[in-house]
Image (cartoon, rainbow, N blue to C red; front, side, top):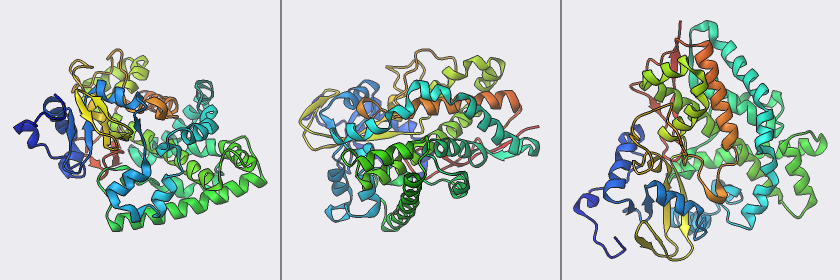
Length: 411
């Protein structure tokens, strides 16, 4: 197949509508059709979808796929929207930058997420997990998202950033991240206004945090970044604020969704939940399988910097390309029986944390938090059940896949 090959009649019927309720409830049926009928697919909106594991891996590692954030926003919203606060802020983060700016910014925070630093956090995180469960254990019920999956990673990233305990109430109260800014479907004017207001408030707080750490330096990541900004040659004030905000959001949102999506998947496959209760040593490997099965990050985007062939199709330069991580994770060419959850599955290498130079900095931290949560749940709440597992309350976003709530009961 190449760029001159006419699409099949079946592929003609493919409609990419990632915010439709049916898609959000189950995107995997659409992914299956994509892989089978049009694995390199150009949507009506004008961007390309990659759905096979090998194609996603290739495109994430090949330098001919860059970020071009400004160009992407212009294509989706128009040139006049680049000054919107939410886009101006995001444009200064390592998430959307190419080298050398990406390399410069990432190098400033990498040491906080080394394998050794993360391993050293294990006792603290296990204590935090127990504290969250202590708050609800005698009640016989909780909302897993509100009471555990959200609170735990928020506290962990607040610790890392040096956010004082008496500043944390608003962060702990609910989700602080709008995944819509990352979705390929443009936000409405109303959504943009809400996102702008939210980022303006967040920036005001992170400015205060930086001022505090200038006056009262601590052994935390914000202090390290403030020192880099004060050196004057590695970080501007705008980049400082934007990347602290990015670390805060990315440091908890995807872990929250990993825990929620994972627990839901286990209770929709009760035999797998029972396997973990019978043999908790399976849990570290099970976390990889849960990441594969229902990834909390469903896609990432790039732009072709030159003409490039992928999956037998030649893509021109300056084309927007979406790598469907959730689709790659269920590619039958990579995994046997990929639609089945198997907590004992071997050699699982999910694409859920992306790849290449933008591979998620906090991947090991998210894995550790999820491992300790599931271990505590099987040990302390083995009778836990999810009354709404057949009608889950999915959030209305595509890129960041997660639940509004997840009621649980036990006896």
